[in-house]
Length: 116
Image (cartoon, rainbow, N blue to C red; front, side, top):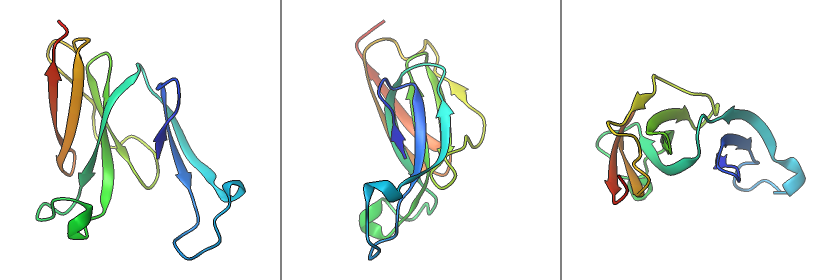
């Protein structure tokens, strides 16, 4: 999945598996989700709570997207569709620097610095 430019849409692409011949022409759009505001941060959320990331053999199944309006949306990395409910950050994204870190299935930490 990728965030398009301008960052107002989340696009899930299907590409050939490792070992298959890869061609740009073979990537297929699985889903395109229009976002209500610009995406300002994204984090992979790993299903296996014992794993800490890709180095542990974990597979990210969801992504947390932080939007400029303060919404945090969770999207399925296989289907590209929203999963679960969105949440709203108190005070919004604040216009400063925003970072996100996945903590597990539908769990993410968001840090804001500067702004309002």
